[in-house]
Image 1 (spheres, helix red, strand yellow):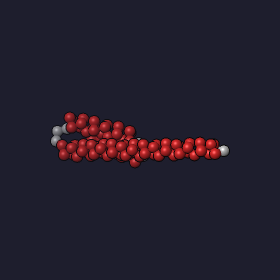
Image 2 (cartoon, helix red, strand yellow):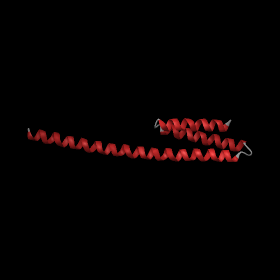
Image 3 (cartoon, rainbow, N blue to C red):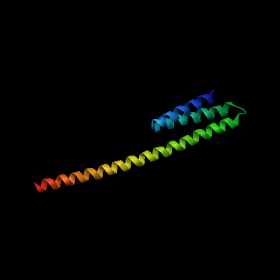
Length: 100
C-alpha cells in the first residue's frame, strides 16, 4: 500500500511539474520518499523495487530543483530588463519635459 501511495504522489508531482507548480511538486516528491521509507521499514524483500522507486523520486526532486533555479534566473533577468526599460522611459520623459 505504501508503494502505491508513493507512485500516486510521484504521478501528482509530475502533474504539478507540468503546471510549473514546483512547490507542490517538491512536496509530493517528499511525501513519496516518506512512503518509500515506510515501505522499506515494513517490507522484507522486494528491495529492488523499493530502491528503483526511491531513485526515481530522488531524480524527480533534482529535476524540480533545477527547474526552480532556471525559473528563478529567468524571472530575475526579466525584472532586470524591466528595470532598464523603466529607467530609459523615465530618461526619455525627463528629456522631453526639458525640451518643452
